[in-house]
Every structure is written in C-alpha cells, then in structure tokens.
Length: 117
View 1 (cartoon, one colour):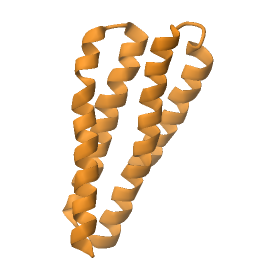
View 2 (spheres, one colour):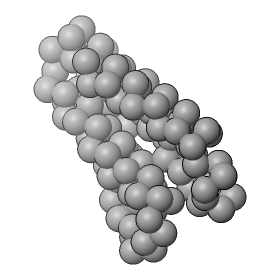
View 3 (spheres, rainbow, N blue to C red):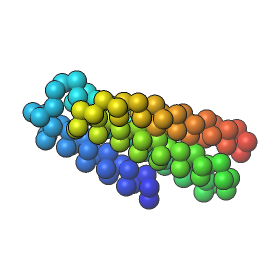
View 4 (cartoon, rainbow, N blue to C red):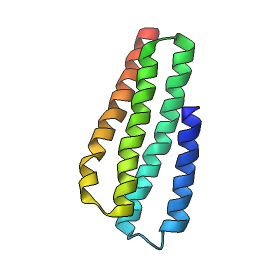
C-alpha cells in the first residue's frame, strides 16, 4: 500500500510541476522539483520490491529496507520539493540525509537478497 500511495503522490507532484509550476518557477528550481519527482518514482519501485521480498522470504531486513526507502523519499524528495517551492537554501543541507536513507535501503535490500538465496 505504501508503494501505491508514494506512486500516486509522485505522479500528482509530477503533474503539478509540469502544469502549475512551469510558469512560476525558474528553470533551475523547476529542475530541482523534477529531480525530487524522479527519485520518488524510482524509489516507489524499490518500496514495492522490498514489500514483495518481505512477503516472499519473511525476513525483517526487507521491512527495514522498505522503511528506509520511504524515509528517504520523504526527506530527499520532500526537501527538494520544499526547496523549489520556498527557495529556502538550508533545505539543500537536509537532502543528503534522505540520500543516505535511500542508499541504506538499497544496501539492506541487497544484503537481504544475498542471505535469502
């Protein structure tokens, strides 16, 4: 369900950026917003993969990976959305924390898959 909600929001944010923000944001800030959407949509697939793996192998590591992906989407993409919309530059310092959560999710997904073989 989390992947579906994150995917729905990603499509909604993408459409919002493409239609409502194109005339309101500078090209640089629109690119920042679009980066947030792109990473969100990539990681929706990762959330789905983690949920599928958790159901298939019943290993807690996959649930943790999924939670890290969701946290990473919220912090990484969320900080980019807010940066683009508000221009608050300090939000750029928050973005790498979300990136770290996304990287950690991928690492745990790999570890879990290796151990499940």
